[in-house]
Image (cartoon, rainbow, N blue to C red; front, side, top):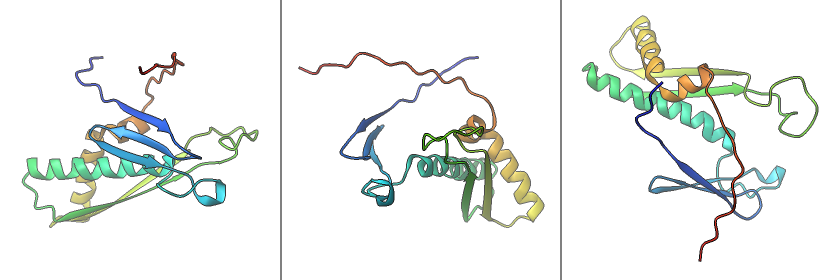
Length: 151
């Protein structure tokens, strides 16, 4: 296993359920719906997760189309995922806390047959890092660290 690039994102708690993230030169906001105590100032973490998958598939689709000289006029990626919310709510469940299944549907606007579009999507998903991280097991480490004091 070799790593030649590390990507880092920092998240900070705000008021209520608001979380601000520094993503490169961009700031993103995560929140919860008002119905569960948030202010609905941004998507939930789970919505961002699904957006990451759809966005990565579309991005890799654009890259591959350019590489293969395919006239890709557009691509819409619809991602759905199912989960049992009992675990994240702190209730007892035998189900995993995360998503149990994902469905990725891509509407590909290009002069291709449906079979060619499927083959293109298969190749795109094989190159998509987010798809790979969902489809295969990745090592995740978590560590509590001392608070940094800024003078």
